[in-house]
Length: 233
Image 1: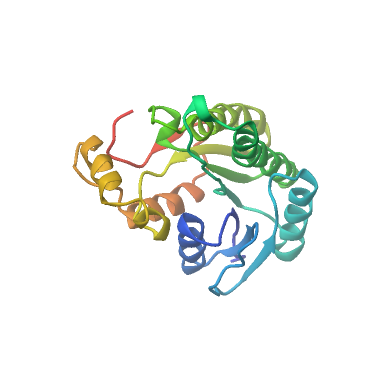
Image 2: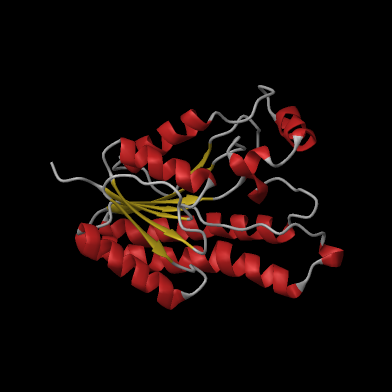
């Protein structure tokens, strides 16, 4: 049986790294991209490309190279994102634009190029990594929350437009994880996350990864938003 191929943006660390490792462990080819920090790990049947997803020409090159390397794209995981917390009164326009350009525009560029490839092969699934911040308000998270809320709206439209080509598009709210980045949040922040949870817990990373593998293999689910968390929205 031909191996499936997943494209993952932002594979250097955090959830992107964990996703690359998990999909590889499950027998997938992995085409990943990173902006500046080349991944410090190796996995079989993978290629990593330095790509600034905020630049459409760079994204077009990346997706074409992924298809060239592995023949097709079965799944895209739009994971790359940045966050620069500042309250609105002190928000810098350059800061705002950088977050929107990466988290929303960059995601759009990757979706556009990948949908084109999936339409030609009449199959494929796109999973956009959004955030519970799209639904809940947090101090200093205006740009991040706005970008993630817009990504949900984009997900629904892309699902409707891609459906006639059997391209499925969904979004996942991954919850808070104790990856390297999560651990740097501090005990006070993590305690606050747990206080919002009906289970007084953060999301288990293995639960999230298992769900992503499951969703990537589905054939009749599209246009949906999945909250992999115990915080109610």
